Image 1: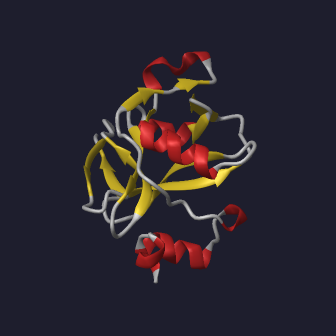
Image 2: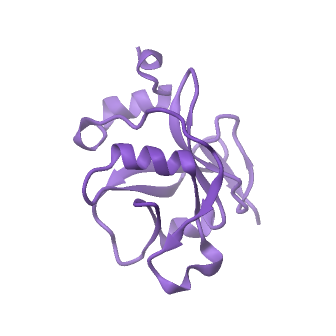
Length: 154
C-alpha cells in the first residue's frame, strides 16, 4: 500500500507512528534539479549555506501553507551513525538558521547545521518513493545506500 501512495517504507512507518502535520503527505511531482543558492535570514550565513534544488523549492511551495517551512535536523542513528530528519514546522527557534528561496523556506538548527553546511536539499520522486534528500554533503564521509544516514568526516 505504501508504494501505491508513493511513500518509502520508512515514510510509511513514520506516518503510522507520527502523522505528518495536518495529515498531508510529503510527495508530489518532480521538477528540475538544478541548484540555487538559498539566502539566509541572518547576515553571517556566508560559509554555512544550504542550497535548494528547483524541485525542492517547487515541492515546498506545493505542500506548505502560511508560515509552514521544512525543518532539516540531524540525529544520531541510522546504519552509518547519523541520519537526516525532515518535518514540516511553524516555529522558528532562536538558534535556527532560515534559508529562503523563491518563497520556500528550509530551517536548520545550529547543531544540525554543523553536519550539513554546504549541502544541497532536493526533492526526488521515484517509482518506490518520493522524499526530500540531502545531496552533496561536504561534511559526510560516507552514507548508506538509501541516502538517509551518513558518517561524519573527522
